[in-house]
Image 1 (cartoon, helix red, strand yellow):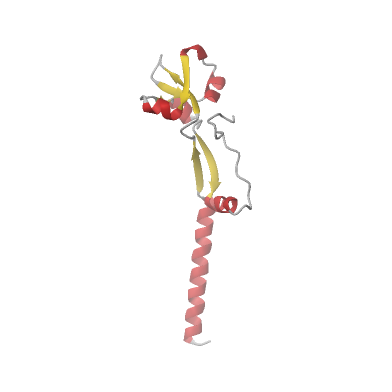
Image 2 (cartoon, one colour):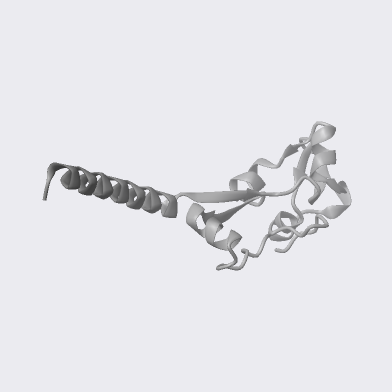
Length: 125
């Protein structure tokens, strides 16, 4: 094998190795889906001007009489913050696919993951 062929072989090995390492890293790096702006939330005027997702209410037995319904964007616009416990329990986020999974989904090889939120702002909980 002459020097040119050896250099081409080394370059090929380097490119393939780099591509494999890159693919391995991408397969472990996940994505996060966040709740859309039009998602329905309850706002709490009594305690601390927070907004709360409906599933959190069901899980924590809130008294709904004290709460008003609006979208997340409306609540943010008037100065409400997400309820800290609901945020800590990941009510407003959902684990997505890895980057490789997203690419496979875009090509149609994988079905989209079920989402916690519908297009109309209601919750799938």
